[in-house]
Length: 284
Picture: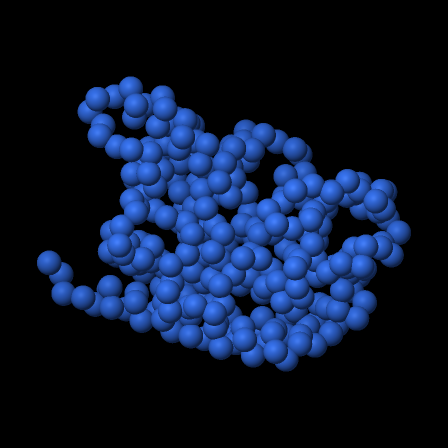
């Protein structure tokens, strides 16, 4: 797609088959699907320009740390600013949310087995997610790959400040070999409260600990070091800005740059400090 003065102008995109596609409901944002050159694209309206930039920043971060992601472009459609991305499920294969798989496991196994003494909320941890996936697919290799991608998604939420990553938004594409859909929808980023470090996806029962603390305190050193490696792979903020500006052929507004820069540096420092403390604390 071609950028002109900072945006892809979908109103002038001559290859769109239907210039007035039907809008669909996608959270709080107006959205629609449309076809360009026989390829399917998704457009999501943003409430403000900063939100569109957040989507691009996050997708660049994910790519830099080798986590699967949808690629976003800032676009204008019917005079509204938003983001556009290519459909990650072009074959229209069956999709199943991780929440749905866990609910099914709970209903078919947990409720009917008196040896278990769990409520559904207790299943939001990595061990039980593994068990639910194993029950669903009956293949340890498939489960191992899915778990690796789920943990990547969990780590990515902290790297990007995403407050809207939950088990319903983690979608498995049921191809011959099931796989986790690329990470997407980064619009709900909290770049003001990095110190809370307490975002949406949970891998443990609800507790008074923050989600990050819970993850760090219950995970093996292998996963903590893996998390640390992802932080060390994070690109410099100038690299992110330059990548966006070269693509858009326009400077990012200064106020957006400054806000994101302050959050980015503070967030990474806070994450690294917590991880180093966990790795170096005395063994019990």
